[in-house]
Image (cartoon, rainbow, N blue to C red; front, side, top):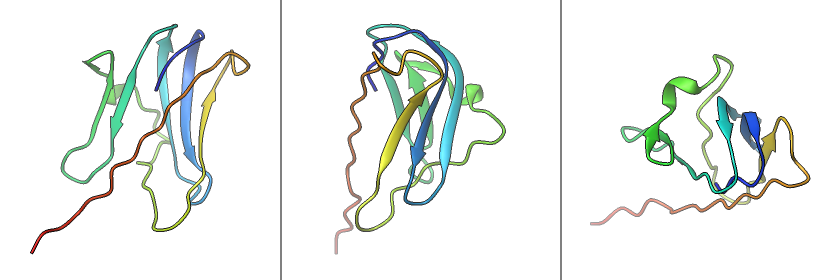
Length: 95
């Protein structure tokens, strides 16, 4: 996630499932927020520093369902200047 604003509360919401992750942290231009919600590999890092403890109590791990999903990045402020890049890698099982 690319920060291009100053935000203290930022959410990632899967509109398809209704689940969201909300972080209580400050982001500034150039920040990168990395999130992995794969079971057993859960991680959230802002510029490489662990921020998993910055999740709000209301947060649920956002998962991507089969088919189409709509993901939203929702900063508390600066939405008109916010930039976001979301990537997804599907899990492939071998034989």
